[in-house]
Amino acid sequence: MVNHTDTSVVTIERFIVEQERLYPAATGELSGIMYDLALASKMIANKVRLAGLVDILGAKGTENVQGEAQQKLDVIANDIIVKALDHGGRLCAMASEEEEAIIPIPARFRRGKYLLLFDPLDGSSNIDVNVPVGTIFSVLQKVTPGVDGTLEDMLQEGARQVAAGYVIYGASTMLVYTTGQGVHGFTLDPSIGEFLLSHPDMRIPEHGRYLSVNDSYEALWTDEVRALIRRYRGLDGKRAAMNVRYVGSLVADFHRNLLGGGLFAYPANSKSPNGKLRLLYECNPLAFIVEQAGGAATDGSRRILDIKPTELHQRSPYYVGSRADVAIATEMLAGG
Ligand code: AHG
Ligand code: MN
Ligand code: MN
Image (tube, rainbow, N blue to C red; front, side, top):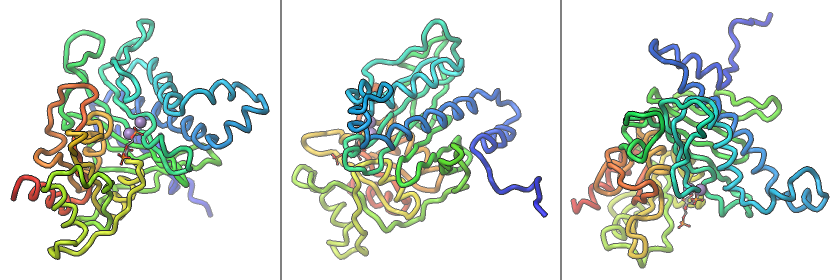
């Protein structure tokens, strides 16, 4: 006989509600942001899935796909997130990798106490070759007086994030997030349009198998960075070699390493003295997630989450993944 009270299917909505009950003081606002993000990511997943068909559908003149085909998918993803979240009354401002300035909440909508920072489509240059791409997001709480979110509100240390997550649009679409109570992963069941809990309480292995780094920059690295990467690759004989895996989509590389253990590195180089990745939209959210899963993230000398940002689009060197592997970067780059 079917036991209706003990279903093993946990939708993201049910999970969020149950998590919220752990905080008697919760107002439900953060939960609302999570619902809206889940909805936005389903809409983006649809667009990503149709990416290769845009020309065919456009030629047929169906709907307004033709118009949208002119638009880059990362701009489409950006607009989907802004429109899904600007009117909910929970945010006081947003910031996106795709937009130079802070995105205000239109005056006609109520403002809330949270700020949303996001990379709408990470790895977007991979879209044309059908490689996984993603969305990364970070939620902060307002610290300045007044109703609108300000630059000062945005420039908080990553340690002050109240939630962070990413969505990976791969063979399946997954949403992984934390609110500081562990890391939980949900897989989209496209037949019912629901994210279902598939990876509760994710933990990253202490040591990893995989090294993700773009070593075509080797000539531009410092001697310390070169020695570090040689160490990971087992070339200095001091440790077993890691296996190199580099997708070129941070979300995809990070996701694989979170599940299987490993380290992703995007070091500084002489052409990009702060590396490439953005502190607020990429480094901080994934650092919050990895720490919640038992891993670590550093810029080589500082814990990522301790860095006080000074600019919205600030970049940072980045080493993120299994705790013991990140510790080697901290040791070797600090001259230890
Ligand atoms: P985005 O598509 O959001 O601009 O990010 C691309 C990033 C990241 O996803 C990836 O890890 C990195 O760029 C790859 O850069 P390189 O090609 O320099 O290795
Ligand atoms: Mn990105
Ligand atoms: Mn992007």
